[in-house]
Amino acid sequence: MNREFMQKLLDSGEGYTIEYKKNEQKLSSDVFETVGSFSNRYGGHILLGVIEVERDGRKVGQVTGVEKDSIYDMKRDFINILNNPTKFSPTLYLELEEFDYDGKTVLWTYVPPMSQLCYCNKKVFDRADDADQDVTNKNDRLAEIINRKSAEYRERQILPYANESHLKMELMNQVRKMVKGRDKNHPWKNMDDMEIMRSAGLYVDNMVTGEKGFNLAAILLFGKPEAIKSVVPGYMTDAIYRVENLDRYDDRDMVDVNLIEAYDRLMAFCLKHMDNRFVLDGDISVDARSLIVREVISNILIHRDYSNAFPAKLIIEKDVLRTENWSKSRFNGELDLNSFSPYPKNPLIASFFVNIGLADKLGSGMRNIYKYTRLYSHADPVLSEGDIFEIRIPLNSADVEIVKSDIEGEKSDIAIINSDIENTKSDIEARNSDIASTKSDIEVEKSDIAGMNSDSFEKKLPLNILLDKCKERSYKSVVVANIKEIYEKVGVNQVFGESDIETILGCVRSTASAIMKRLREMDVVVSVKGQGKGKYRFKNESEI
Image (cartoon, rainbow, N blue to C red; front, side, top):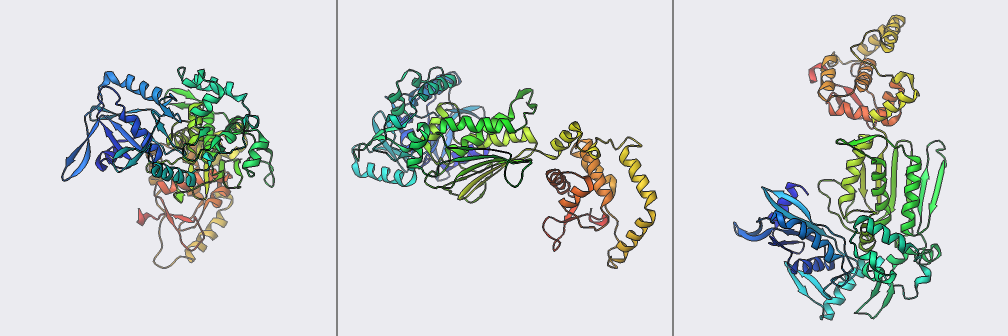
């Protein structure tokens, strides 16, 4: 949550997906009725410490604030009631977040839409504009909600012939340990196996149709491989490590076990094949590798469209970790961290993962992927929505690749160079090359001049300007040295791309891409059209 988004919620007024509650000292019972109605409709945002007022002819939210001494109890009560199956079913693991608005505290949460009917105190609530309506005894409204959810979410499909013999119920002891590790007061730790199943919405009594039994979400989470295959024939996650053998693979794990066990298998595969780097989050050392992998694997397991036979893929290559899974998309294109709206593909599975601590609440995963990828590889991940949802996690930025290569001694020509130190290897080689090839340089220069138009006798931008721009951005000396070498090797108006940088520096493509990105950011190159994709030249002195 940021100030801009909070202001947007306040300016929008109450409606289908926004609800204000004054609740200054304690939670009112209608807060949970709103949670139920949002769960049964489109989802929505609840803001505590806010009232609706009329301003300039329209209704908006006005912050009154929650009393600071009451915040702890309100947050605790919110979690406890939503996880009490006698109060709320299926149970939800949601949290109230604190937000400071001009010195006043607002408690905020986002309620995702669920794939099955949600009951609050054994009543069903539906959202109608800005009101929560009790529709428990209105069969037409109940049927409408169920039909809408049936069309949207396959995970809630009841499998009438499924029974406990199709499930690995021995995993329940592990589940109790996991929920206790997340919350020592979690109600599941004292429930029996079937009470947990009912609380999580995995065993359902449909009051409208009379159906009862385990649903698809239960089979996916706890099922034995043969049971999963019988209801989701295409289920599998193909984990591939491909670095040396580019035609096939170096290592592979075709994961077809239930989601709880699949999480452990995929985590082990990624940790086996990814570097564990020393990473600081502020002053605290963090295991960024594990935190990135946790979010990526949770995403590929939770948000997959299991009605499609497209096999999910997790592929680790030299410079990237990438995933692919089929998705019911509501948007096509690259996701923007600052504007995306989270939407659950499988709310029951997502809620279960949150309860056992394998995922955080909806929307936080993308923020964590961005945060820890930037710490791990000094680059941004790419998340793309479409029929196939894709994640690309860069594993090496230019700095990381250069330092790694220097430490391992793989490339002698990437040694750290200080531009202020005289007589370095590159300076000596450059002078020797200048002396040895003077005649060749003259001929090249003549050729360059001959190829120029009469009005284009330009000088390349001065080197000192380039170095000043590097200094402004605090680039490391090795990066500055590489940029300087490219500048010296590329002539006036000479067109070059990433492949040319690879040749000049003898580096890998990811390093060349990162350096080209820096040149664009410093605004010292100009895009050249008609020469192929990604071609540039250095700016001339007159263009600075």
